[in-house]
Amino acid sequence: MVKKRILIIDDEEEFTRLIKLNLEQSGAYEVKVENRGERGLSAALEFNPDLILLDVIMPEVDGGDVFYQLKNNKNTADIPVIFLTAAVNKDELEGKHGMLGGHLFVAKPVEIKHLIYFIETNIRK
Image 1 (cartoon, rainbow, N blue to C red):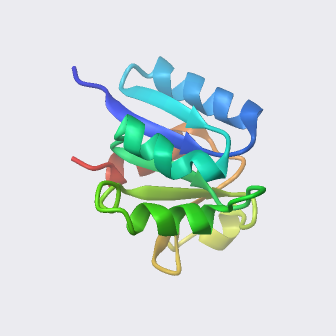
Image 2 (cartoon, rainbow, N blue to C red):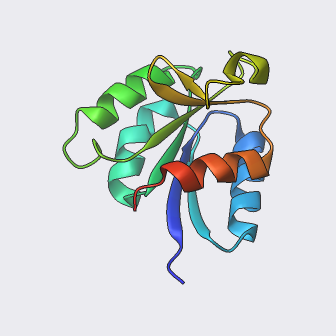
């Protein structure tokens, strides 16, 4: 089985370590972590992921800026992005299928089964 490649761009090292561990334990994913927003685009170019999990609030370069860089680069523009954030809660996303402003959001803290559902329904085929 070919593993799907997931890039996590999030400044919270403990959070990314746990998500990486859980996703890799499923056997379906190869996961790369980048904990610095300013390295998000270069990490995506190097890793060529099938999907990116992107934190919204990060120091230096926030998720909105990283998203803009990704979508304005021909090599990364088509990679699906799921925003991870503690800025909204699960109740705010309830009934909206995770969509806010036309973008997919998953509220932190996230349950791994919930995250895998969104990955599987949005991953680049």
